[in-house]
Length: 282
Image (cartoon, rainbow, N blue to C red; front, side, top):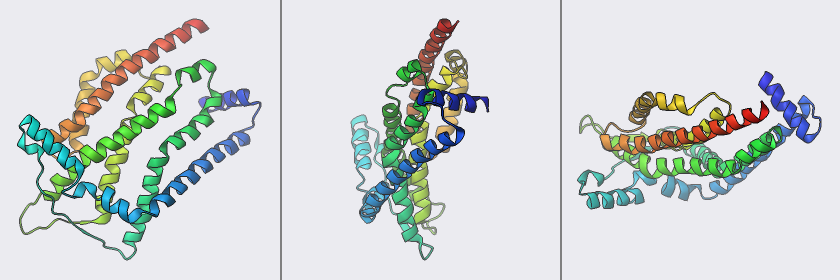
């Protein structure tokens, strides 16, 4: 409660005295503008949803998906035959009357949110900015750009690298030749969307660590001391979100570990900035 009062007080000081209802009203308009942009993007996506669903969402389930060609070329270059994935033979089904229409609406909103992510961050930043001091604003310069780049890097990684291996493995896995993999549309869509959004959020780790380090919750010393535990957690997380084969989990573990080491350096920088600030205030 004290943090909330301090935050609202700082916003009031920088914009003139604002009551609690004024802050809520300000936040409401930031949310409204963000929702309107998401809806506008979703409408534009919906006009081409058949093509997007066939070529983009179902892309990793097709043999001609560009990532499969990349993997195969890389495998030939490294002389690793397993990089060339087997042909996919998936069949999809719709089990509800309005299933396909509902899925088109859901996919449009989901892709609309992804496309609108930088604008949503910008609106969120405009709401937070008045509560920050000039020095804090200086240190947070470019935050919207970096958060957007990290988010889209996670999305691209999940879609072009993780999704193809996941779909290929589970799509071709059979307990018996008597069983066919006939997958529901919503199950396939949920699998792809969870991976894409999950990796997009996970890739925000350096930014999260920076702000936690700025307020003293996380320190570079703590991150270095707990590195072995962090590595174990990253290995387990990589195993959980990938098919049970060594190459898939390595594909996920390597970028997650790089993000962790990057976060250590970012935490060290944030800690130095916090110490300078404390020295000036003392």
